[in-house]
Image 1 (cartoon, chains in turn green, red):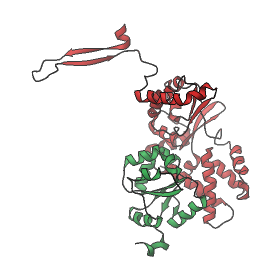
Image 2 (image 1 turned 60 degrees about the horizontal axis):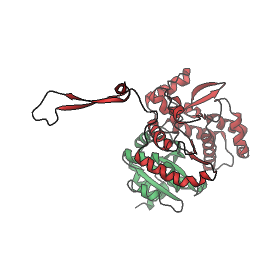
Image 3 (image 1 turned 90 degrees about the horizontal axis):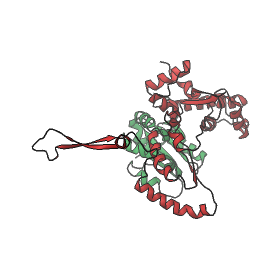
Image 4 (image 1 turned 30 degrees about the horizontal axis):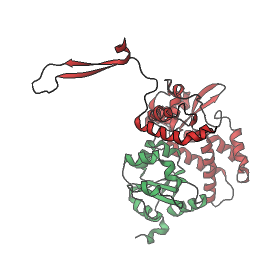
Length: 133
Length: 266
């Protein structure tokens, strides 16, 4: 497996804060399938795959949007790839997937790949372990 | 001669079958003559009229309208760009509206006359550096942005080298090195922070590559051979894993240095 930099939700939030709220950024996050739920909770909840298109196109304050690619859905990748500028215009977009889906997605979406701020490997935050539901 | 030029439609009498309503079969024979520019679709014509009604007052008062269209350079399906050029761009021809389009890199290597037919001027914009060794310009960019306040010249040179002349990667490496230093609780960017940033960028280019892609990269790194007509090779170009350079009037290809740094051995 490719050894991307490893981070946690807390460290990622620090990184986003350092970049500033108005800096559009796009992170591809990879983690083990068993950790998806914990990381999602650490990051404050996801946007369902079928609702993101409407949500991110809303005008307003800068936002951080998490989309979990927990299954292979080429239509979603296609929409993301074609409209990636629009999706990142309103703030930060975080895509969370397993390494297998992540590799497949990046190969299928050259525009998205070209605009990535970074690819990171995520681990559940040990400090937040007791706070999860 | 007319049939040869424009084609014809003939009806072929197949063997009669009692249950069939249409015993004759229509066959279209295409002509040799083809329109250089296909006709505009009805929907495109409607939008063309709308655009012209908006633009006319400006054009008549001597204003120059120029449309800048970015983001189409990394299209992996150049036929989509053809459709766009044949319809949308063609609709603007003769309207005194200028268009500057960042088009797909793959069309630069297309053997047809498509680009020449649809555009008055076609210009290739390669990586910022003329070649992988041409680093002075890239170093100056970082120095003008204050890099020497945060790192030594050796680190600046290393970031310039491993950016391979891609401006976006130059800035990514500098920012990423600073982030590694920050996470390491250091005030200055050191050698290990830059190395970590280079490895991270290399891994970003490595992800998703199959064995066929890796074989092409190894071959290019070893003996400089790169079959640009190959579909996998074109994907490597589109995703910037392979970069094209121009130096001394000669075009050549090279594996992105950050990727070459992490490319596994066979």
